[in-house]
Amino acid sequence: MPRILTYNVHRCLGTDGRLSPSRIADVIAAYEPDVVALQELDVGRLRTGGIDQAHAIAQALGMNVHFHASLRVLEEEYGNAILTHRPSQLVKAEALPGWARRPRLEPRGALWASIQLGGSEVQVINTHLGLRRHERLAQTDTLLGPHWLGHRACREPVILVGDFNATPRSRVYRRLASCLLDAQVQTQLPRPKATFPSRLPFVRIDHVFVSRSIRVLRVETVRTSLARIASDHLPLMVEFQIAHGTGHKPSVAYAQE
Image (cartoon, rainbow, N blue to C red; front, side, top):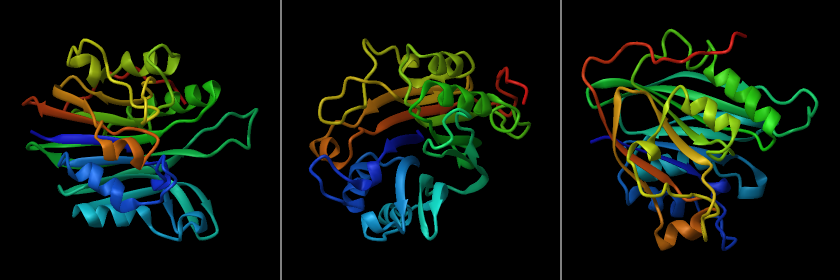
């Protein structure tokens, strides 16, 4: 069965202060995912030795990579990526809106790839939302709008993943969960698993949302000793099955833009 893993890698800076893309790759490789969604990657940045972290991790895993820079300063980039060893095509990679009253907030973005999984073409969107409630709401409106989840090409099966900086009690989570299904809730775990902070996780802000044609078989937060120090977030892995007869639009009531 296909597996997808979402992971905020914190620029590959561990809780022990060590920078190591290879350690991040080792955490991921142990779970053999088909698709990996990464957030907070440095590419060519002086602070992390000028390494292209997205390609370094992809190469270690034997995967292809689609990268989107949310922030670009001269030759330095910082953003999110989708990695996979399956046939894939980048559909869209763009900035998300900020909060007009706080124009200096960190830029945010999302990328969308179409990936061949389980005999179906799965639409995978990876994002990392802002820290302020107002910007997260604007970014969520955009993701639910006609250019992303509401787009005519965004047909089932659909998976939306990432670090949403939003707990299940937030308006952002409730809006997304009204259109897509939270993978952790679908497994009916006695208690959904937190992903942050990695050493002693108690907050659930990293999520995997799926459309109704996807049956979630297993959800696991990666709690290995290596995962607890490789980043300040734990990875979230979802194993799933795709129903036959997919290809219709998910029921997303989007905001008009």
